[in-house]
Image 1 (cartoon, one colour):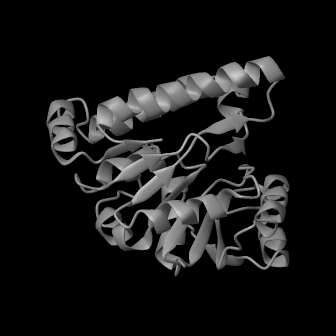
Image 2 (cartoon, rainbow, N blue to C red):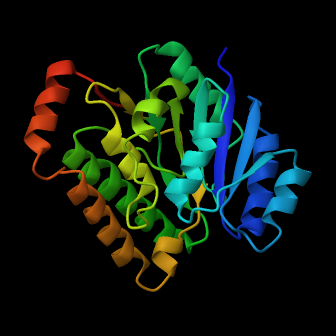
Length: 247
């Protein structure tokens, strides 16, 4: 059985974090550790993390990529599971993740979709479908692999050192999950499980300019990683190795 470390970067997310930590405590597969990475909160985030028994570390370098990386570096589990403070995982979330990696010894990373729980019902359905299609199909096509989504992703700890040495933690204009994806080794196996679904806050749609800004950051991340120029080479490598997986 794998040991599981859950990493949660936070910045003034106390209300969301309280709910998440309660949901993690109710998992059918108990995490071996929960690491809350405080990125300079001025609210009660640290208090509630400690009250729930989470391990709290502090990352003064601003940005979610630096915060997440600090959590990954500190994690001791065989599997590192990343989510956001506003993630709402179902009770079988960690069990399902563990089963994927147990069944497939070659699997390096796993991700799944989300449902925006704080939008009106019809808008939530449409926004969730649009976002998942654009990210997993559109971005996936550009990087020639299943892209990891930070609100719902897991990976083997052993792949972290090779990724970490390539990251520019001071760059605030990158999507950390997409940057992580782009830094994976060409032969790494990433998998998408459509049933590995979590709830997520729809701030990207409810915040003025949120979607536009997010798309802009995604394009910059792809540009800096040469995804557009190397797309055919990436697909050739993937098709040759047969290592692009969806479910």
